[in-house]
Image (cartoon, rainbow, N blue to C red):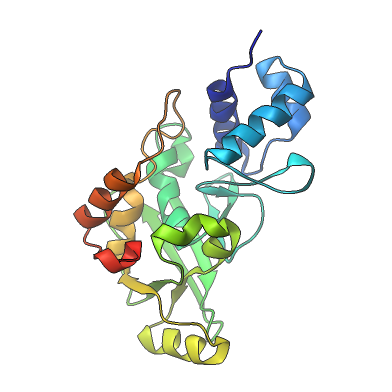
Length: 225
């Protein structure tokens, strides 16, 4: 019997959602009733389709918006802790998880400014963006994000202000990317992953993605144009 790759994808995401950690190959094999060799092959298919990022021995590193490794953000509900893959993914979690994990309808997102190490934390939910003067800086344009997705996510950070972004750029030698305020980040995160925990989810094609980005107030330079 051919393994249902989409069923595996849903199990990856739902187990990650409920526990805050990536499911192991043998755990997934038990969940879907398959051999570990079949699971490994299916995980590689999902990685090729940009649904996952895999590390050594087919371990799941990222299943956006979930991360198996710390990349600058923690996201905490009343009973679960997730690593936030980036500013975007961290703000996504209450939108994506609220109906599946009710305790996650409101989460605490915490990080530090990469320039000055000042700590920041926000209560994030689906009612509206949190208050704050901080800015998000996305170093890599959207069209290039999957060239090295872990590097990309590790450089979607929140800073105290524009001046902190400029300080960090001068110190690191990086070229300025795309900046947005907290309300824009919240709008970007709100519906980007709609349906990702459900069977039959289809990843956005470039044209649909560009339309979505425009609808939340982002210019073409975010995409890389």
